[in-house]
Length: 80
Image (tube, rainbow, N blue to C red; front, side, top):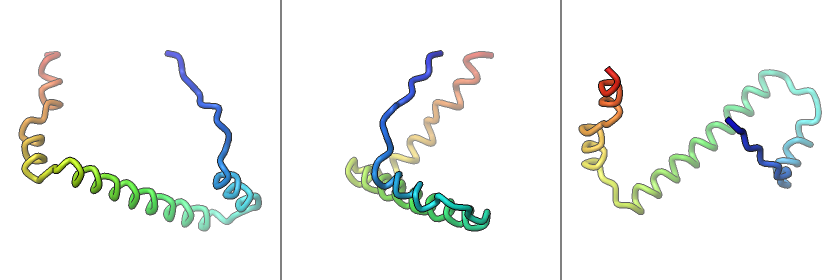
């Protein structure tokens, strides 16, 4: 399988972050920074999901229908 690598350069924010961390940082600080980033990205993800759900008019009934008709559970049976 051929792997495609993107060769775009770093943007200004990424370069700035690398410069900020161009020194030894205690492990506990690195962990705290990772947690902050994950929390931020998680918040952005939920905001995007909420936006799409509202934009498309998805309701709890739609989720229940998807759950009741879960096609993945049938995949394993086709190979038996």
